[in-house]
Length: 179
Length: 290
Image (cartoon, rainbow over all chains, first blue to last red; front, side, top):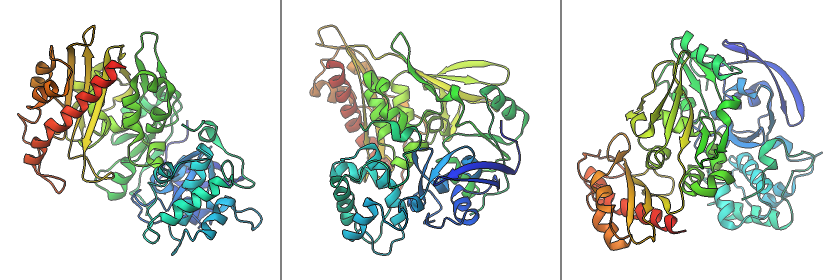
């Protein structure tokens, strides 16, 4: 049992780095990532769980980090957009976003990339409909989604499914076979 | 955004969780949090202590028992229902309903227990749970009891749960050969709240020439899922074809004063109720024939 209280000592692994921190019960997970760990790639769009800009992979599952509390990071492995590029080289999916002009203002991009990364782990060759279903929780107000869907499809066709460069798929979500 | 000051604790067992819920006034169980966390952000309800039940093994179980019934722990997520071979085996409609809730991120966290215990009249699972004749298993520090799903939903954001009581699991009875389930929602867009919704379970008599039994459950006509008794009566003994089903479900909107809101007027809800009821029943008949 964790200690009951308003602040908590937690141990978590974010992008393969271990952290030990004290967090508050009232703190959202997205603020822990951004404010405490300085991982500002995860964006805050709406704060209400609607826009998906704060999407991360938590224990192998895709979640919106504004809908969890900081103490819930305890004992869980987390992946954020910062884990995608490796030594300055974009992941195949990121490169595909670049090549297909899948972003304009870029605000939704970290969340889109995490949703698409998760999708391709579940299903390395999704149909267009499955891609659209996979990014349904991510709002983009610039692109109209067409180029994003193209970028994900092209990355899938080029074999970008599976783990992003340098990051092993974590948690049970990655082990499940695609339906 | 910071929430209002709140305590958090993550118990290791259901017993510890029940002790915490009993001992702390203003304690609330935190399951997937896909509604509760927003409630806390909006400060529409005040919670003194969040008891995180998401990692309790007992609440995460999902299995098909020997008699063909499904035992679903309260913290099984929509995603797990969607991807479960055991659920799909006979209860594919339940898996499909869960798999179409909102988006992947919400399905990763949202739980069947949370969806039922919130008792939001727009929630997807309560009507199908009632149509399938499920039983809700509740536990407190001192006692355990089981409540039919039909009696669990008491009102607008209100259930049969007493203070200190926790929904532990849900048993969905077997759907034997000759039985099927159906579900149909009417909404303005894929992301919109349902205007009116129906769920059905139909059993065909041997030979599939007539309907032996039917349960038709309507959502959004009242604050809780309601059985369409006249439709059920009309279906028993009827031939399982579209004309008979249309006649039997014609009264599905009667006897209620549904709300009018920006999604649709009460009159429109009543008018569309037979349409969704018919579609849900026809889908159930199709399932029963497989």
